[in-house]
Length: 146
Image 1: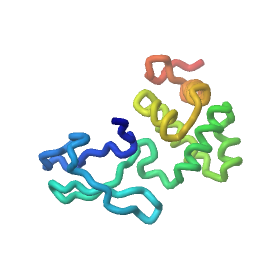
Image 2 (image 1 turned 180 degrees about the vertical axis):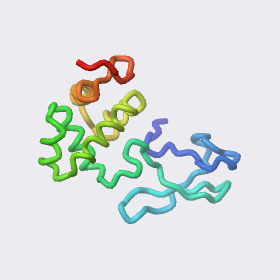
Image 3 (image 1 turned 135 degrees about the horizontal axis):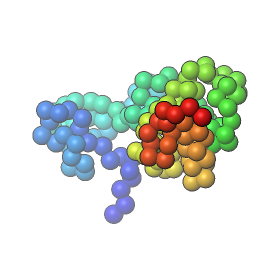
Image 4 (image 1 turned 30 degrees about the horizontal axis):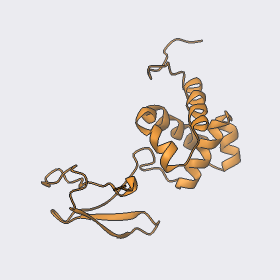
């Protein structure tokens, strides 16, 4: 049986007996938000929630804009040029780069599977962000001035 990974959702309520337990039948689809994001409901505790991706949480950019910014970073375009091309503020572009830098190891599959980015795009984007943010291979920021 093949399970759609986008539908693997578990209850987020810490008091629920099925908290973080996947594929138990306790979470059902429960409509959509105005922006089209599907809502879910736990039948055990009644809590409703959305499956969010932490990298874009609290960011006021759409998934398409996020993908576009990532692809432009993969082309090793400067943050300022990306800002001009997308019409987004430079701080927004830097914020996206910061979130990618902080979450890259956990989010690598998200870029490939959910955002449908090619392996070479993901690696190129990561190389560009490492260079811009002065990150060493182990993920620690480089404190030395070059």
